Length: 518
Ligand code: GDP
Image (tube, rainbow, N blue to C red; front, side):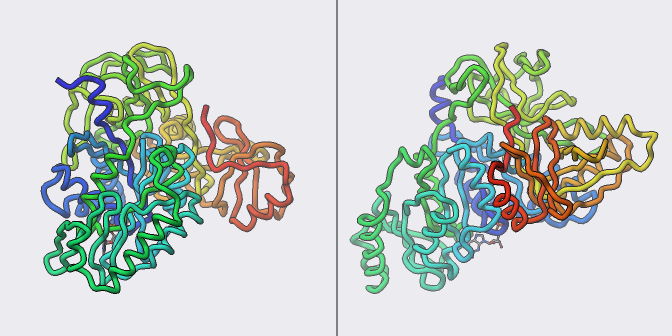
């Protein structure tokens, strides 16, 4: 029987981040195939595509349903128990995407070799980086013509401010792509284009596989990496200061297996999490965990929600009674769910790093702590900067009570953020990370609370939490100071240019992209 310690050591919980279309879904699918979690390529993709064909409520419903089953995918590979957290992208990009990163112990960043570092990658990277967790890079689509590898590494270093270390090096690209040299294992993976397959050969045997000019180029690159670059440091990887970079092609399944093998070796097992009584170590005996995401069921006939809990310590067993610290209530976890690529199933036991889904009768808030009886709470759950803002109006004043309840519950669930402009009386502003959240809000207010609302977009696109002196804003400043739900002042601004101008003008004001809730 495996011990608690075995289960900690073998656990790997990570998220894949990328800009849309870089190849996250394709890579996920290949990883699941290696893990035996799906049987055929296309399974994940097909569901994603359904999700993309969205223009009416049915589709949103479908989409939310899909997100539920793919919030976390567990598979076993090479003795590891792997939890892959899904970070919603495309239209369902939202604050949940950021929050998922709070549950991860490391991150894989997929970059399109032709496009380099793109905006959504930057935002997600910054969240991971603020937690100092290891970031591994997979540069994808080597089977196509892309940018120079050095150029890509330099861009990652300059734009993201993290050191890079190439774990392998591509030989050619696009039509001339011959394979990759695995620096870590000193072997060559030869790309067999005709059969879309690969063969692993040692360095000597590589000579016969590639033309002289490409071999020279590779030798030159390897020399440069050894001499000029930063040496590889596992410690720096662990601290999130250096990103190991892997080149490959997800669609051709090239370089994916060696990436997975090395990644699982280097990625950390479940890490301690900060709490009101100091860091909680995964080896601590009592069960503990925190809610990082709440997913509503969009079907009005089933109003239940699912709260996703990341286990931090101890062993979870089905049917156990746990303490919901914020409310002081004891709850029995009898129907907890875990997720495979195609099904959800009832989980009997789970360990640090695992994620379980709990039926939520409306009890849970983002950041809530569950323990086996202890009184501490996990800390460090920020609100992230919304990018879309709107005014909201209730259509029929009679429904005021339901309206208030709906707004407050959906805010606590983390669907929207509410801001109070200090000079507008009871008027409120809403903020969301992804614009689809407004549609979801309107729909859920109607279906779950019987309330019709009107949502009017505002011109702001940036929110920054203010530290220091609040700025005096003039009438034409295209900015406004509001208070968040904890009465912390937040600056809403229309665009980057205005933001830069205000920062120049108000030097005593420090601005932050997220707020710590606690
Ligand atoms: P996501 O939006 O990041 O999940 O990206 P997808 O995995 O859906 O991929 C976006 C597009 O890129 C799809 O058309 C894929 O078939 C394609 N794609 C993914 N990986 C590769 C690759 O390694 N090479 C090439 N040429 N295309 C790829």
